[in-house]
Image (cartoon, rainbow, N blue to C red; front, side):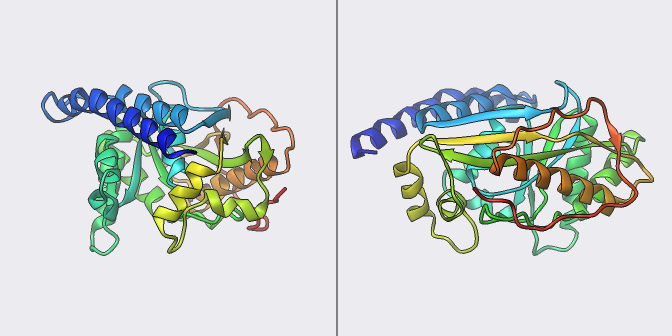
Length: 289
């Protein structure tokens, strides 16, 4: 991308932010209302300007239906892609709040922050998650706890899943939560399959420097993102949180394997199914083209 092309895209993105952010901020801070359209529109503007195409398949929650979404995490671009599809909020590490630009955007997205260095942080975060679930919202939890390199799926953590259920039960009297597996994959760039060695140009993980990564994103060409909503899992008051989380992990793993091998995705079964009593989790490696 030329310098001129990048300049006008950033200018258009800034203009979109200036138009959308003030009324959104007023709705959140002054009117105490939940505003959902501005973040979605901003994400969609970003995707259009930077040639990122998002497709989705599977069984998403119905509008207004609460769900705790358990997703894999590859890149900062995950947030833009998922956020463009539905009104929702994310759970993220507290450091993000202090990042220039990104921190402001996360605040407008109503991000729930967790301070991993502070005792009692899990209780505060789970209470916020439980409140939003009780209000019928979607809350996205990147269950690996960090970003991966795009070539493998890290184990899903279950602590916040159980804590959110407990908080929901305390607030609404119901301990039933819809767990929604969500897989996000980057199968193509410039219309061609992304091979294993190229996935690290899309993924942002570990101690990678942000500036070179963004330069690779801008200059690498159009990206296809595929979002797969897995079959929902009923997370009852007496359901084992580790088994339920492992079931969501298995659904995400299967969806990623299907995308990366260009196999046809099987249609998701309708309705909510219970978490299995036992689960055999496959290899952590995601099949690569």
